[in-house]
Image 1 (cartoon, rainbow, N blue to C red):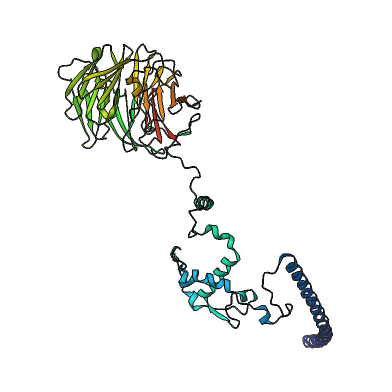
Image 2 (cartoon, rainbow, N blue to C red; image 1 turned 90 degrees about the horizontal axis):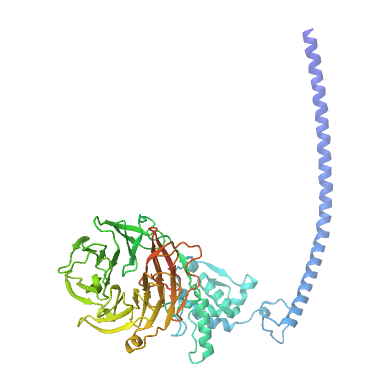
Length: 540
C-alpha cells in the first residue's frame, strides 16, 4: 500500500510542475510582446517631442530678440553698436569688442593687489594671497558673460590672479557710484563744497558718535547723568560719611566717616573694588583729604591732634597737639593747591597754618569774628576766610597780612566758601541757605554785589565744590533731606533735573568731582557713597 501511495504522489507532482512551466512561458511571451509594442511607441514619441522642442526654442529666441530690441530702444544699449554689421547675427566677431576703459583700471590691481596708481594714492597690500590663483587657468571664451573681459579677440585661457584683477577692474567700471567708499580719494581743498563732501565722507566711514562730547561747553537746563554702582558698595560705612575725595589719577577714591574707618576704593563704575581699610582707634573722622600732589592723606576730627597717612610708605603718623595752641578741635582744614600749607580753623577767629612737610605750626591769622570756612586761591599764595561777622577776608600768605575785607551781601553768618580752580569766581554760603557767586577781581576792586544769588536752599549751607572746569558748582545742606543743587556757572542757573525725583540722596554731607569731571561721588548720612557719571565729560 505504501508503494502505491508514493507512486500516485510522484505522478501528481510531475503534473503540477508541467502546468507551472507552461504558465511561466506564456507570461514571458506576453511581457516580450508588450516591450516590443512600447518600443514602437517610444520611437514615434521622441520624433514628435523633438519637433515641438525645436519650434518652442525658436519662438523663445525670437521673443528674446524682440525684448532686447525694445530695451535698447527705450534705455539704450549697454554694448557699443558696430555699424555696417548685422547685430542679430551670432558670429563671435560681431559680439566681440575691445574694452579700453577697463585696461586703464587694471594697474590698480596689478602685482597681487598692490595699488600702483599715482603718487597720491595710498600703497595698500592684501592681507592674504591665494597661491592657487597662479596655478589655476580659466577659459574666458567658453562662458558668454566672461567674453567682455578679454583684451584680445582670440584670447582664451588666463591665470587665476589675472582673472581676479580683470573682474575687479570690470566692477570698478560698471559701478562708479562706490567711489565715495575709497579711502585714497583726494579732495580739492580750495573749494568749500569739496571740503563739505570730505567731512560727510569721513563721518560715513566711521562708527564713532556723531556728536563728540567734550569739555567745551556744558548746556544749561537738563544735566545728562547716569547712576552707577555705589562707590562703597563692597564695604558701606556704619556711620555718616563726612568726606569723599578722588585722587589726582581719577581712579582712587577715599571715604571717611564717624565709624573711624578710612577706606580706599578703585573706581571703575562697575565693581568699585575696595583696596584698603584703615581703622583710626581714637578719632572719629570729620574730614579726610588727599594732598594735591597725591602723596599723603590728612585726616582729623574733634581732637587736639590730626593724622597724616603716607600713601607710598603706607604709614600713619599722629601729629599734635600743636605747640603753643590749646584748640580742642582741628576738625576743619584746607590744603593749599601747591601742597605746602595746611590751614586749620582755630578758636576765637584764629586760622592755624601748618607746614605739610614738617607738620609744624608756621603762622597764625586772626579774624574779627569766629572762623567758619576757608578756601585757597591764587595757587596757594592767598587764602579766603569767612565766619561769624558775615565778612569775607582775603589773606596774603607771603606777608601773613589781610589785604582785603568785604561784606558778603545779605549774609549774617558765613558757613561755606568755594573757589574755582582758576580763582576767577568764588562762592560764599550762609546759615540762611543763600549762596552768593562773585567775580573775584570785581569784589577786590570794590564791587560787593554778587553776579548771582542762588536761593534754592532753605537751610544752612554746609558744603560747596566747583568741578575741574568750573562749569558746575555743587551746593548742599546736611540739615534737610535731598537738599543738594547743581548750578550751571556759565548761565548761573540750577539744573532742573537735579536732585533725582526719587529722593535717593537722603541727607547729603559731602561731594567731590573726579579730576576729568566725568564722575561725581556724594556721601550721605546713611553711610553710602552714591556714584554718578556725568555724560558730558569723557574722562574721569
